[in-house]
Structures are given as structure tokens and as C-alpha cells.
Length: 437
Image 1 (cartoon, one colour):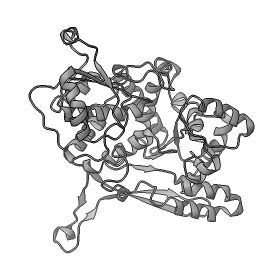
Image 2 (cartoon, one colour; image 1 turned 180 degrees about the vertical axis):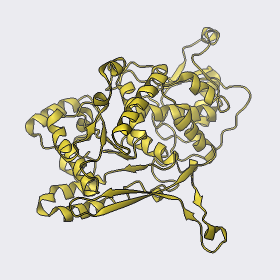
Image 3 (cartoon, one colour; image 1 turned 180 degrees about the horizontal axis):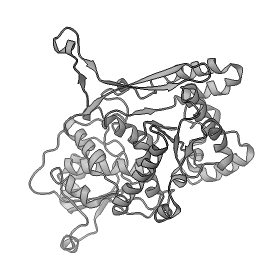
Image 4 (cartoon, helix red, strand yellow; image 1 turned 60 degrees about the horizontal axis):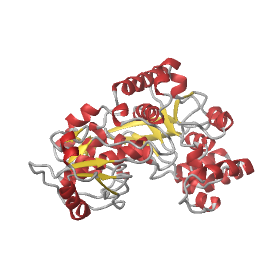
């Protein structure tokens, strides 16, 4: 259902987001779309200060709020706060409600709009994934305008992020960014077991108690279902099997790695040229960001986005958001581990030689290497597969212009030399262009 903007706003929409930086980003994006559906004035969304990460940053501490308001001015009206005269004239406090997850536009028009019209100020709480995935093209393109253009980080975050990108590029013309997501909270939430014995079970079990609604899970069952993140060692083995050599430069985006240096050492043995934001930035450069996990995550976001290849380690919010952005911005490769197939392979890797193992890893990863044809309309989360906003750019050569054969698609090749057997893996990248937004 398309939203039709009217001259007069139906009221002020307050949004309380939920989760970490990228989960909140999805909420902010959908908040703009909901405001458009309701013909409401959006108040700059309130960020989550109560989540696991305990970051008290406000919207303006992470995103360029004036850019956000101005960029979307032709789509909706956004204000920094409800005017005092409106608040003083209200007989009751703003009405608060939580809408069901993945609600259709019709739900907002039938259930939310009457309350907004009556109360004039309405707050939607815990606003994450509260809007349907599949919307009409106009609203999907608005999602793209918000996510890929209007949500710009503040100048200090952008400047430090770009400095770290330049430092990586100065050392190597091409680099891989790996989002390990091997922090204690992630491992505890997954319900998986990573071989750390009773100590691991006790420590992660205590963290897991913070989520009172989580069910009891079978670690073996979760691993077989592909729900467990790979260990850093397994990520390294996967990359080497795919053909990345040990002189490849890696940027690792992560918070506190569970197990510390002992967990990271096997990955460093496979790829000695590993860097993090803490290694690239001077202490004084990072100091203003240290107490704020979301601002640190924003710096990682920039360096990962600028990488030649981005490797995820779970299908979380950052992985989805960045994969979608990289598709939208001209199709930069994102590799997702096929954890369901790889987990069984890693368990039996000592039963085969390296060449056999590498061949099986490549077979497992078919369809997970970030090829352009992985993005099909209606597949997965729109934030990860923004198909409405991306179209193919045909490459016309002399012959195809004469109509003698169909046009080719422009392609760039990235050659990754193999291991000792001198095999190479050629990954083709098909150029794309953004659809009109």
C-alpha cells in the first residue's frame, strides 16, 4: 500500500529504538517509512540506553542529525522535539504502544493512525523490525534513501573511520574486513559450545541468564543447524581454503574476543597481517570514543564498508546491513560462511589432506560468496537484499550494439592465488547501479 502525503500532519511520532547500533539503524529506517505511511511528523528517534551494550549515546552523538532532517525533508517532516506548546496543550502524556513485529502498512493505518489522530503525540517502543519486509516500491526506495544516504555518521566518526581506511590502504592496495562477532554476549546468546570445557559453560551460562526468555538449546543441535558462529581459527581456515594467501591484509572488526589472545592466535598464524582499530589508531584518536560501544561500532562499519571483501561470521544486523549497502553501492563482495555445511566439514578436516579440504570448502560456499545473482526480489531481509533499489548495468561492446549478441554485464576480476598447489580462484564481480530513489 503506497502512502500519500497530505499537507497537514496527523501528529507527532516518537520512536524508541532497541538493541545495538545496527539493530537501531533498521528501526530508524523503518520509523521514517512508518511516518510516511501515517503522514506523521517524526521526532528524531530515541536510541536504546538499556541494552546489553549500555551505551548512553543519543542520535546526534552518532548520526549527523541536521543532515538527516534536511535530506529527508521532501519525504517527511522531522523535528528534534515535540513543540512545547503541543506538550502543554495535551491533557494526557503521550500514548505509548508496541506494534507487532513485521506489521503491514494496513496495520499502522487501521490500528495506529486513529490513536495518533486522537492523541496528537504517540510513542512506539522497542521499535526494531516492526514493519513488514515486503512493501511497495515507493516505500522500499524510501528505505534505501534513509539507510544509505540520510543516516550519515557524525563528522568525528567519519573522519577517524576514513583515516583508518587510508592506513589500511597504504599498507596494502586491497584488504579484507572480517566481522568476527566472537564476543561473550554473542556466544552466550547462541547457546553453542566452543570447546572451552566447564569454564566456558559456566561463564557463558551466566551471561545467558540476562535474557530471561531464551529457551534451553542443544549446543550440538545448534551447530548442526548452522546457528553457531565460526571460531576465529575456522574463519581463517575457510579463507585460506578459498584461496586467500597468508600475505593478505585483514581488518578485524570486533569487540572483546572471548578467550582473548589465545582465541585469536590461530587466526594470526594463518594471516600475520591482522589489524584492528586499536592497532591502527593512535590512543588519543580513539580516546573520545572509548566509553561508547555504538560509536566504536560505527568506526568498524566504515572500515568494513570500504574493504575490497567483507567477511561476516553470523547473520546478525551488521552483517545484513553492510551486505545490503555493499550491494547498493555498486556490488562489493560479501562472503557469508555456510555454517551448516562448514561445521560438519571442520569436524572431519583432520581426516583429509589440505587440497581435499579446500575443495570441499569451495563447494560448501557456492551461493555464499556474494555473487550478484544471489540477490533476487523477495529474498531475505530487504536490508540485506535491497533489490528494488538496485538494477543491472549492461556493458555494451561494439558487437552487442549491432545486435548480433546480447549485451554482456560489466565485470571486474579479483584473483586470489591459491595455496601451495598454485591454484587460483577467480571471483567475478558484476557491476551494478542504483535504481532511481
